Length: 125
Image (cartoon, rainbow, N blue to C red; front, side):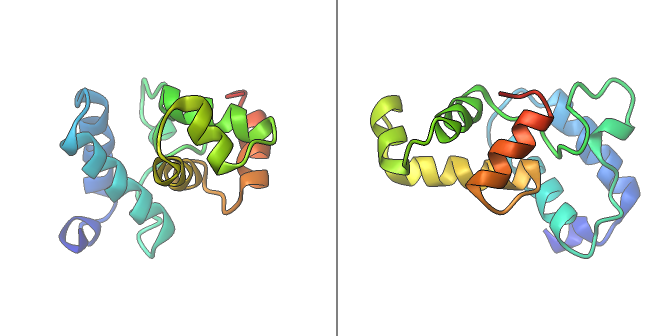
């Protein structure tokens, strides 16, 4: 990752473009992770996706939330625990935690309350 992050803003723009072109799979996940890490670390100078033309991502998001992440957010907003979310979505509690981690990174928050508030601000839920 460091090799990519050290390249700075120019590479960041290419990563955002590559993320839009990649349908799914390991490459898209890796690009998303690079963008999340760059936004958290010293490489904050990488461009935000909304600064690029045609970015269909709400402002201040590194990457769009998936449908499943939106479902998890809605259940969090309804006051469900991780275990309750896991039961309702028929997934493991560890998967819920992974979704939460991804959500926090994409929204730039650190807690469930902040995630719900931020997603409401952005009109995601």
